Length: 430
Image (tube, rainbow, N blue to C red; front, side):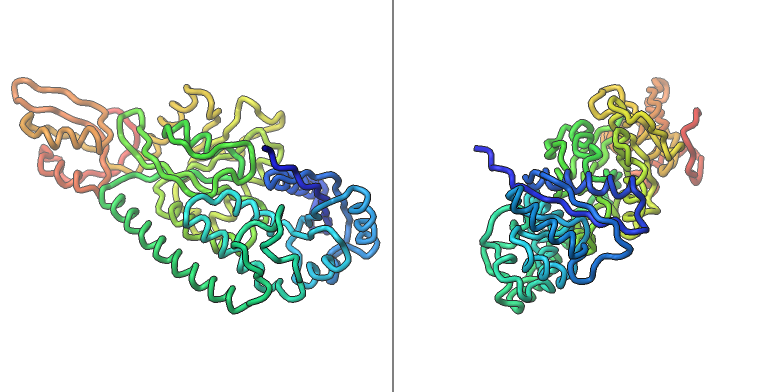
C-alpha cells in the first residue's frame, strides 16, 4: 500500500546576493527534495528581502499569508528553503499550525530514509542530534520523534526535547562507534594499498547518475532511482578494465548546494573513502540546465574536504537527453557518455585506463616460461600491452605498465634486461 503524500507549502526568501535564475532553481530543487521525502508541494510562497527577518525569516505579512494558505490548502508541513535559526523556528511554530521544517532538516530526513548500513544510520543520527540540540527549547511536541511524516524520521522513539544530557551522551556514543568503524575501514584501505590496488571513486552532484554508472561499470546492485540522494552508503566493487586489469570502484553520496555543515562533518568518514582514491570520476548531469552550478558545488566541497588535488576525469553523463544549451566546462580529461550505452561504457573504461597508466611506469622484460606464477601475476596485476613467446630462448617477452609502489615492480626488476631504472612515460608505442 502506497503511503499518502503529505501536503507541503514551500517558502523561499530571495536575498540581493541571489540572482533570479539561481533562486528559481533552488526552489525547484527544494520541490524535488520534498518529493523524495514523500511530500507533495502544493504551492510555493516567495518574498524578496534585503535580509531575512531575525524573528520569523519572512516578513509578518507573509506569515499572515501562510496562515491563510495552510488553512485553505490543508497543508501538513511548511518547508523553508534556508536553515532557520532556533528562534525563527520557535516563533514560526507558535504562529502556524503546520509542522515547520527547513532545508537542512529536510535533507537530514531524506538521509534517515536512505541510510542502510550501520555506519550510515549512525552518521544520520549524529547529524540530526547535532542539528536538534540547539533547537530543543520550547519546541514542545514539534521535536518529538513520536510523530510521523517529513522531518520526523530519525533518532528513535524518544522525546529528544526532555533531556539534553541524554542527547549529548548519545552524540559521544555515536562518535565512538563511528571511530571504530572508520579504523576498520582504514585497515581495509591499507590492505588494498599494500596490494597495489588502483582505487577509482565516483563523485558528483546528487542525481547525476553515479549509481547507474556504478552498476553498469561493475555489475553491482547499488540502489538507483531518479531521486535526490538515492545512494547514501558508499559501496565498493571490482571493475575490470579493457586490458584485464582489475581496479576498485567506489560509489559515494551525492553532493548538493548549501549542504548543511553538520552533514559535511558527519559524513567526513564516509568521504574518507574518496580521499584514498587514485582517480576521481566527477559525474555531471549534462541534461540539467544548472549543470555548471552543480560542477562548482562539487569542486567547492572537494576543496573543503581537501581532496581536490586527486586526478579527475569529468564524466558528462546523460548525453542521450542532453540539455539544449549544454557546453562542456572541462575540455581535457573529460568524456561525454550515456550510462545506458554499452559503447560509451567501453570508451569510459579505456579513458580510465589511459589516466591510470599516467601514474604507472613502463616495463619491457623477458620472463622464463618456468616462472608461471610471475607470468600470471603480470597478467592480472599490470597492464600488459604486448606478450610474445620466444621459442629459442624459452622465454616470454612482455611489455606493459606497472605501479612503482607494487611488490610486483621489484620482481620485474630482477629480470630486467640491463635497462636500469624505469621512468613514468605516457601511452606511447614501443
